[in-house]
Length: 448
Image 1: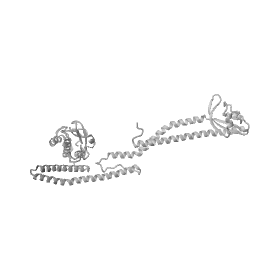
Image 2: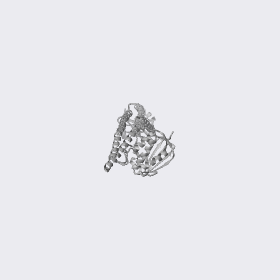
Image 3: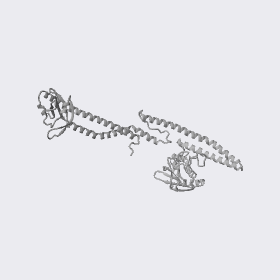
Image 4: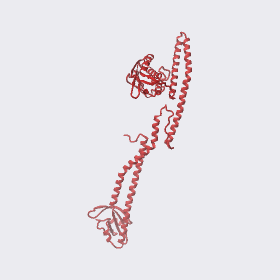
């Protein structure tokens, strides 16, 4: 069982509640001690007044008041009992205690009273009375004080838990109010994506730590936006600049191939160079498309498209292009989309399946209540588990090689996501049915 909460709000509430409970217990303890002293002080004040009256009567030789007092006795200097209250059974002081009395002495002890009362707790005052150096013992019942102390302790004991609970609730409410801006910042930050570079966190009023944190984070987001815009501009410009030299390189290679004659080694080298030039050309086009997609300027020309017809047409072309056995099934459904971009989605997914070693791909179109589903599955090894969450990131590939490879640059699925996003759709990657390999599911909105 976890005793310490995992959240900052819970920990601060716990500390505040424990601190408040500790302060409350100390305050209640001080209150109890203070009231207890006041009760005993009031009892002693009354006892002093009675003792003074009885001492005056004894000095005047009137011992009758001793017998009428509830608790009082007079002793000779040798400890002999001279007189006292009729209700007191036995002696209040022993002979030795009488001889030991010097000044005024207060004590609390049990006293036996007359029939029907038994032993009671009494507050006693012993003092010397002149003339004769006699000792006067005067007492008063302390039972009312003990009863008041017990009631006070009971009230404090019963009141303490609800007060601690109220303090904990108050501390929780205060902490919740203080940390409410943090919750708003957290929710807003979790909703900001890389496609919303201009979005900012809500401003927090005031000049406390949370307000300064919000301003700092917004400043960081602004700097990240500038860096991202520079990156997109660089990729866009680099892609534009690469297109011309790559086109020239391809033209020169084609001329060299035409003039190479029958030299096999030269032809092999030129064909390899031409293939790399084609790869560079595709990479430049892909980077340009992604740069436009991130900038929100990817052009999508929509028109009514029958997905089932498009899938059947592309399946025949892609099957012969990549050596795949293709299957198409589903519902004849029309969407408003760019047919060229949808063909690009199917081509990239087929190329990805072929590069992974698949032999069969299946294209399924389903007309759902909320969206139109285009699912492309293959019988290959599927996505590695570590790549499932990052399958659509740029330059993500199934192997760790970063050098030259025929498997592509790792931009195919990134382009798929960019095109789907431009169509206001979503795309997910998974493994499993129907063919046991990779499964990419595209969801597009219905046609108006």
